[in-house]
Length: 328
Image (cartoon, rainbow, N blue to C red):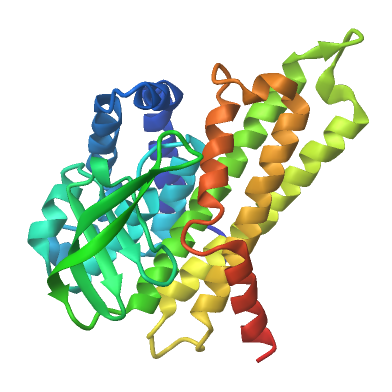
């Protein structure tokens, strides 16, 4: 397998990064916390214009016909900028499922910038951010259906809710729930990887600009070592995400060596969760108490990281899957 990205992947990441930098996502997140959801809706419309929500949908249904590699490249940037909303669901799980079942009518609102969400009976029993979504789905066994929201619960991330849903109208009776779960876990891993990169950048910038005893904080060896540990964790996790994406794309191809896709996805989930958790703790150690405050952007990353660490499978579940694969 090749783990180096092609030029088009770098261009995709750069274009999304530039768009999100101009959008001032932290300001949008704070507006959402204050109850103003319009800036978030506008942001998702712009993301849809870039094709982020259409990457995994077939071209015959108006999608991009891209693969999991392109998806994780895009989602990492969404994590790096702390984009609110059901990211894994709207960029990976739902577009792939609706494309696989031929439901163009349900895809069109997503392509127009209205997020979609889904509850998965094995990995994500509650649907995220249903209030902002045009489409709410549920998977029970191999049955995919539209869903009705019953109860909505707050999350540690003030921009995120999770809802209990009830299956409604059947969309398809024979969907690949295992692959849908792998895509959800893979996209969440990429988002956590982006969050880790964003927190590392915030901590590094602070260490360079903050002075103590007449010297930048970043000049102290202990601070350097902690930040270096985060950088290593991020760079070690990224190839696992790309490798898992390659495995997802190669699954079912006759000219490739069979691989345990779920094992690769779970390995990426463990590594990215660990990197994001380390980045969060190191960021707080570097910034001190200001990192907790709403005024600093790090606080937005901290709460989203904490919420996503158990989304689409807990770390314990993914570790168990890896163990079962290597020591059956």
